[in-house]
Image (cartoon, rainbow over all chains, first blue to last red; front, side, top):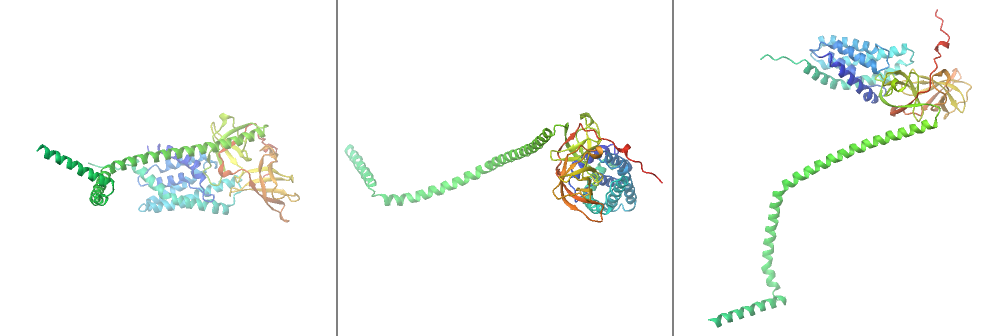
Length: 166
Length: 280
């Protein structure tokens, strides 16, 4: 159930991302709702389907983006592994972990995307890309991190209800 | 007895007539003022209190009715505002479509397929848009995309009902262009900032600010003479091999809504003609 529900959620997020969020940039940076959802899901205490969500999110992103195939998935996988590692260590303050993984995840996913585009011959200057795209994207992602974390937490609470013994 | 009663009646009539006569003559006005003034005051007081009590009793009903009416009117205003927005949107779309029809009529050599822009690439390093027409409507990879203003880009990926368009502002986009009236050939490159620049302009070319930038058709990627923009700044240095220029595009890429795909243009793949790079 927790895996199947990821498909409509990520499809809806991809549509929202493509049709609305991508039209609202800060300089040239935009919020990555799919990345934030993957991180927030991986940081939930009872969640055991973090990798499934990561794979589905990566594949859906590849459908709507022209980035070379597999690059978003690789970026999300690295981010998920960091989130899972942090969940075991600093689970007492999950919102701190959310901020930290959002910061690192944005740099990782955008760094991989930039590297793959440059390897494919796109002459994007690294410093300009960092200043105009990555830094504003980090800021936007950190701004939306709390909201996404709360919403995903509600979803996780609904999917993994605690059994009450009577 | 009867006489006495008749006399009383006659006296009464005379007294009454006398009073009426005095009243008509205005002689009783001071007396009537003294008598009527307290009565009028009393009636006014009673009337005011009665009105207040009546208002107090009826007020809640009126307030409830007014609130209900107010809610109805607010709902009506909201509905009309939504209708106005919808009509404005329709008007905007109609204006765009009208301009596109004018453009298509002015360029009858091409066949066009109109498409709506339904999304932007989710990766901020890329400048691609998604359109709602695909292979089912005859869209093929490599077809140029324009608006009534000028060149937008070209199709890079197609599904049955949608396609992806690489904008000329994409950092990996290159378009062969020529400038008018100088006639100089150049290459238009997209930038990560969303701008475009002209590169590879020969040093001996007399390029000026305000020159028009049009596709040259070289390389077979785009049909010739599609308007791209206007040169806004020239950078020419003696130590450089080529001049460079900044370009203001005629298309506003932040407001792309409806585009035209030129469906009768077949891009030429010149890759097999290019010399292979020798590997050491």
